[in-house]
Length: 216
Image 1: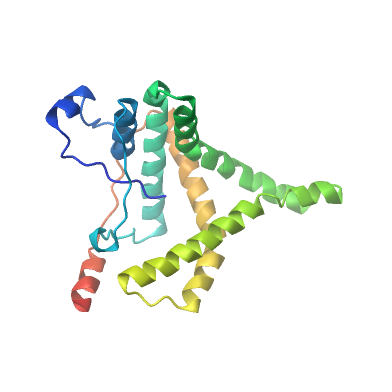
Image 2 (image 1 turned 180 degrees about the vertical axis):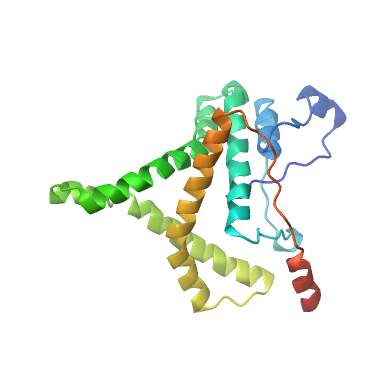
C-alpha cells in the first residue's frame, strides 16, 4: 500500500495548531493526515499519471524488508498515539482503526504462516473443516486480480510494455511477497515492543534516473 504524501506547505497557523511534524514518527505523512482529519480538514487523494513521482525500489530483499519494516512500524506508532480516537464519528473512527491495524494483522499472519504449514502437513481434519481453510483464498485471488489490473494501467499510463511474462511473474511471486510483508510486519512489532524506532535507511542507486534519461 502506498500512502499519499503529506504536503509540507501547510498554512503556518494550521501547522502550529496540529503541533507540526512529529520527527519521531516513521510514518509522518499518515500521522499528519490523521491529525488533520481530527480537526475536520478534508483529505483528498488524487492521481494524475503526468504528475506522479518515480521512486526507486530497494535493490535487495534485505533492503525491502527494512523499508517495509519502517512503514509498518510507523503505522503502529500512529495507532498507539490514539489521535484517531478523537475523530468525530464512529464511522471515521472505525475506518481509522481498521486502516491502522492492518500492520498488526499482517504481523499476526506472520505468526500463523508456520503454524498453517505444519497443520497442513501433519494435521488430520474432517473434509468440511479442511475446505473452510481455503476461504481466505477468495480475497487473496481478488487482490491478485486487482494487482493485474493496476499493472496493466501502470503500463498504459507510463508507456511500459506489459508482457504476459510480467503477469505470470506477478501471480507466482505474490505468495512469496506476502510472506515477506508478514515477516516485515512481525519484525516491526518486535521493534515496537522494544521501543526501537531507529530509522533504517535504504540505499538508492539512482538506476531509474539512468533509465529515464535513456528514454528521453
